[in-house]
Image 1 (cartoon, helix red, strand yellow):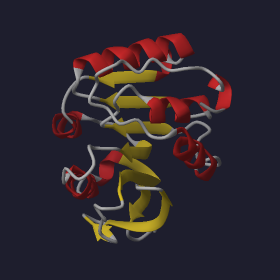
Image 2 (cartoon, one colour):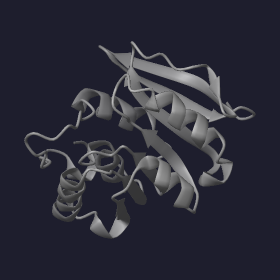
Image 3 (tube, helix red, strand yellow):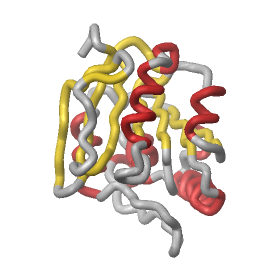
Image 4 (cartoon, helix red, strand yellow):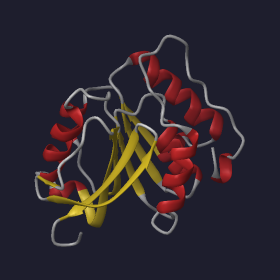
Length: 181
């Protein structure tokens, strides 16, 4: 991890069906978002044990809402939040992304989406988010982590891709509302 929690080790849990964002990619994401992070509100969908949202909190985000349906992963996430001192700046929702998106209120500056690779959920979630413009702040961004074997469209649901970053098989696609992208 970088930022205020630099060098701290996260609890990951053996046997979880979770694919964490590689450390180098999290570091690149933190660098790309450096100017946007201070005070930002983050929504981390398909959070696993929270490595990406925790990285963003460590680099200055003010709040993170984590959505993870797996109970073991959600408990590890809560433990990581407590041990890193971020519990008061976070909410963990143990439910499906679909349910969370139907219930969430508030505006987020950054929405991070990291579904299982090649499951079809990356594009489906992107389209769903595009139909929820009240979910993010003006100028907010949606960042989707996906496999290069699962390319995402240039535009979906009112969102337009304005940047991509690829490392190995992993791609980060950055989207914003079409009129601001």
